[in-house]
Length: 109
Picture 1 (cartoon, one colour):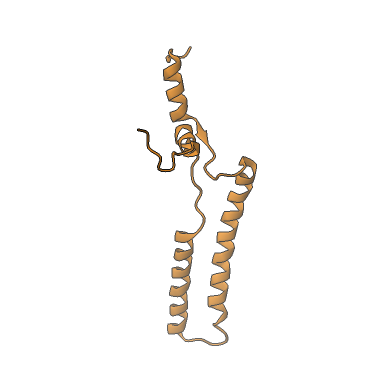
Picture 2: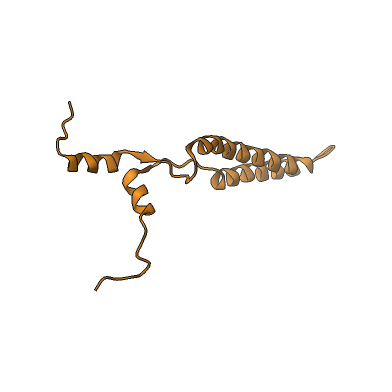
């Protein structure tokens, strides 16, 4: 049995606890696009590494190899920092407040 009795309390708890999709798209497409975003980031990382390592051919010096290794590590770290990040769903109250039409600067007298 619920400990919350009044409808006002129930509504307040609902606005705080219930969550809504924050990606602003259909939930099914979000589910698929999250995976695509992760895939895209990994593909970008592999492409960047391949391009950096492609410059090394034949016999190479140890200094050149260590420079390229450092560039690869920096490239991967950069890709991870600006790559895809999954965002949690937002509370229902925040979602409804954002959807509510604003007055566009109009004030009441």
